[in-house]
Image 1 (spheres, helix red, strand yellow):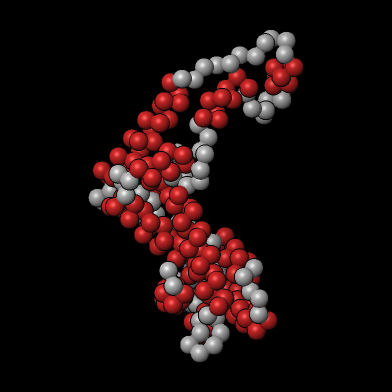
Image 2 (tube, rainbow, N blue to C red; image 1 turned 60 degrees about the horizontal axis):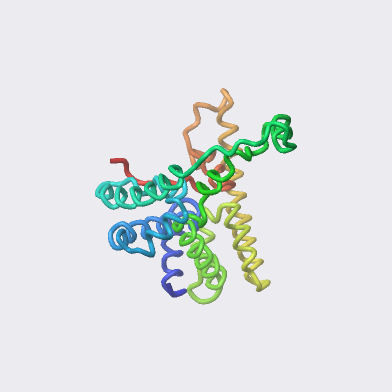
Length: 244
């Protein structure tokens, strides 16, 4: 993806509520999973990667739940489960000698992993990361670099950034790690500071209006501020797909 394309996508995301990088991460995952289900279900390389990662992480696994996806998901999940079953079928309980030091230690420290089941635990541990997570993180890095590189200058992203909800704290922290120019640093910090101050004022207003003396005042910009506060500090909630 070119920086021109990612810059246009960032500009569009900045016009929507919430952290633009969180929004673009969600759309990246959707595009990746759509492409996988429609074009790569029978790709041997894709199948091998999914067996190594033992499917997808919790978030991206449930992102597969949408109308029309059932056949592709069934094919992929059967392939991974067949591999998992092979590992389980050959498993055995490796009992430790009654007087072994490891067995005594396990009886005293209950949080210690059992040596008797260690071989199967190893086989059932993913040997690779969720492929959707890898793709999303790659694009996340591209978007953050694009934001920093295109923040200033003619037709830069600073104006839409200032009018937006800004970055969530985790993505602001990541963005700062890409900044090499003092002018960009001053601009992005100043814009984000103003955005967070605006949200803080809205939270204060919501708290004030919770007092019985002011409850009859009409709702204003403070509506939903508590949810925006969570998103600002923790990142946007993963929205997932439409249920079937």
